[in-house]
Amino acid sequence: MKSKESWKVYGNVFSEHSLKLLFKLSSQGYFEDLESPLSVGKEANVFTAVTKDHERIVVKIYRLENCNFNKMYDYIIQDPRYIDARRNQRQIIFSWVQREFRNLMIAREVIKVPKPIAFKDNVILMSFIGNKDPAPELKGQKPKDPKKFFEKTIDNMKKLYQKGLIHADLSPFNILNHDDEPIFIDFSQATMINANNSDELLRRDIKNICHYFRKYFKIDEAEVYKKITNK
Image 1 (tube, rainbow, N blue to C red):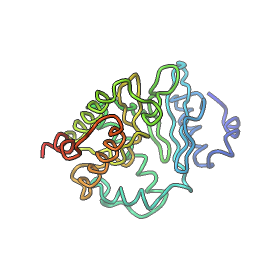
Image 2: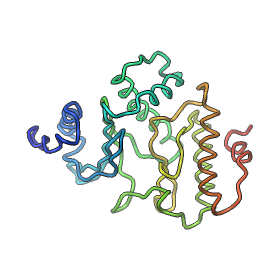
Image 3: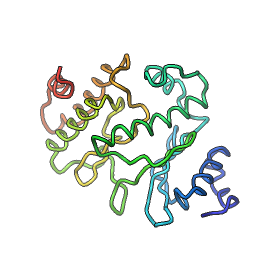
Image 4: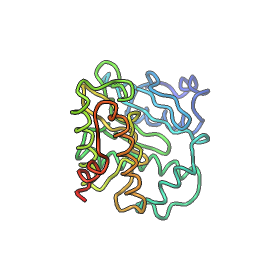
């Protein structure tokens, strides 16, 4: 494990709070050191990390200052699990991370997703998806058999729905193409089907997925909706 002093190399990347959390999670044995960035965005930085057993995991660190707090709050306040959420920026971000962890725990019972390992405040640890290299996003990696990949994607959406969950932000950017298998990621905004806006979010997911696959074949969104919901 790295010394606390050596974590200062990341001082220009993370807030002091995030650095303390990363050191704490490392000292608890979850990983030895951050390895390389997978993505650096406005709301979160995502890194691979190496464990003491030389395995790789993913460390996702939400920014405490740059996150779209209002967007997060709009999602959370609709979620029956967070109906009493207070409009406090830092607490909403912490709830957002907890929500991602909880949603992954539900999703992994029925589909392939990153395994949630641990979370604390604005940091969540997950299993690594890929072989030697990280699995690419669907957006940048065309499936070998688009029709089959589409059917698997819709089947995943149906399994989530039957489990009471809607991804709520599904697109080719947060589906990984891992050996021609769809792996859903980014579950912080995922919503329970008993939320007031769940149907609207499901229809948006369907529209986004159908839009991507329409370049390969014709799709009837109404039929996809019926297949997922049995309505």
